[in-house]
Length: 127
Image (tube, rainbow, N blue to C red; front, side, top):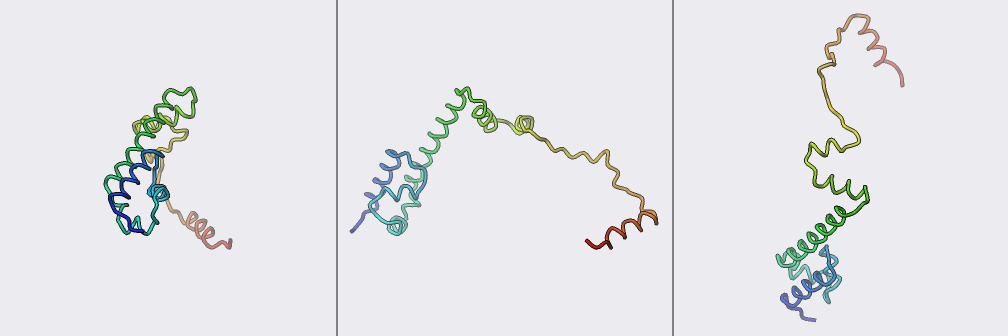
């Protein structure tokens, strides 16, 4: 069957809008052509198709974040907060923080002959 680029692109755009598709693979599934034909026509490079997919994704993300904001569910609210937080706020929200302060650590361990023997024993031990 002979396909036309413009017809396939229009069908793809209609499918994206009607079914709220996110991925190219989903778009191809709604078209009357094969993956090979889709890629031979380079429809995967179509700015119109890319823009339509991006618009659907963005609309869904905005809708989800709005629902999370209005929700009484603490998990959803925390998820939203993590998405919109600054790095400092995110660090404060984190359940664990790891800060490195080498001020109190003495890296200059004196290597006495006795200490050298202890270290040698450790390295020579069979494990």
